Image (cartoon, rainbow, N blue to C red; front, top):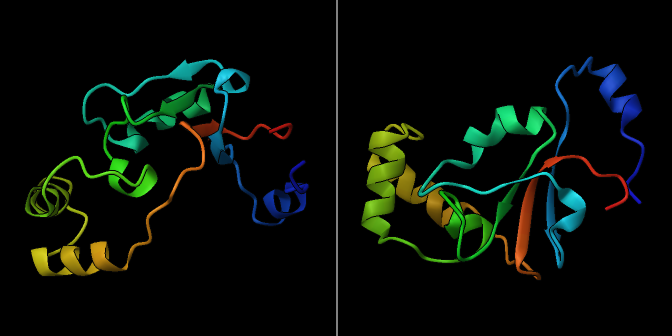
Length: 123
């Protein structure tokens, strides 16, 4: 069971729903599920999270973020830096993007399903 976050939500006047990150053996309890299309950014699912849907990531269907969320290489380091820096605009230079990638820890999932969506207190 998760801790009661309502005091934090009230104190900080948070109006948006909290989003959970789950590593689960079964995706069923998180339905309705949303499957990423192609290299879709994880955060593109934000409107769906607000609507109660959960993004379902697996090694076979993962969208963007697979390197850090699923601990897998899907493109070369050079391609990743170019995409994140030049297309996504996450850092001002390739050098800064390289430094960030070196310092950002990867998540090592224990199960086949990584899910991002509305909080599910029973999970």
